[in-house]
Amino acid sequence: MIKIYHNHRCRKSRAGLAYLQEKTTDYEIREYLKEPFTENELKDALKKMGKKPFEIVRKQEDVFKKELKGKVFTDDQWVKILIENPKLIERPIVVKDSKAVLANPPENLNELF
Image (spheres, rainbow, N blue to C red):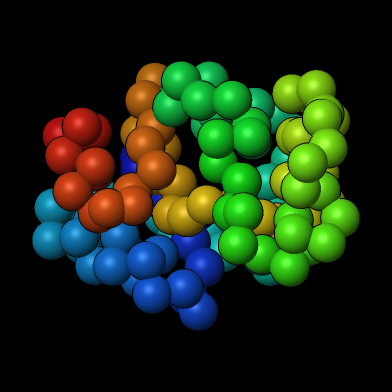
């Protein structure tokens, strides 16, 4: 089963979902702003993407610019920051089996098929 961590208010996330819908009907949508990642889920997705937490931070968000920019955090600290501030997470993240991608641009989903 494919899981897409989605924010319906985000144009890029909607584009990723539409692209996924063209590929398959076997997926589950998780609106991560309503049902946030757990620490284990986020760490697992990062591992499957081969990314560090800071690589998926949305640096244009006010909370980043005002409170986090220029500061140094460990990976574990970034995971906690992202869980507490899910708007900071780049989207959509799509997980399938042992692989995950940041579907921005949507064509990144091709790596899963």
